[in-house]
Length: 166
Image (cartoon, rainbow, N blue to C red; front, side, top):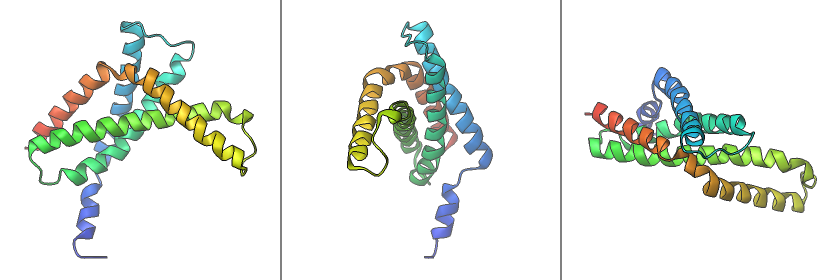
């Protein structure tokens, strides 16, 4: 292992309490964003609101768990402006990607019994197009549930973390 790589890897590992506690908190924040969207802004979806709340919450948790080491990697000895930008960009993009990914997995599970057997060429096509359909549907219908609450929470957290880094 090259000199200094061990300290770099150790630096990527966030404190366990912050990593796990933050994941729970961010997951709850994303679930709250969904709930506020459907109740305050009248964006009710259907009888599947509880399942969708869980998808947003679990996706938020995964987003935090993946984004935090990435943020720590790019903000080592960085100015507060760079820390703010990293938190906004990385946590925002990774959280949206994780929520969309969990949504796509659930979507794929819903349609799995109509798909061809596992190793076939048709099955591969069905996986690709089912996933693409789910991601498109999330982009069109799901992102609105992160606005404005999720964006405000992301901005507030990013500002707090940038101030903390001084």
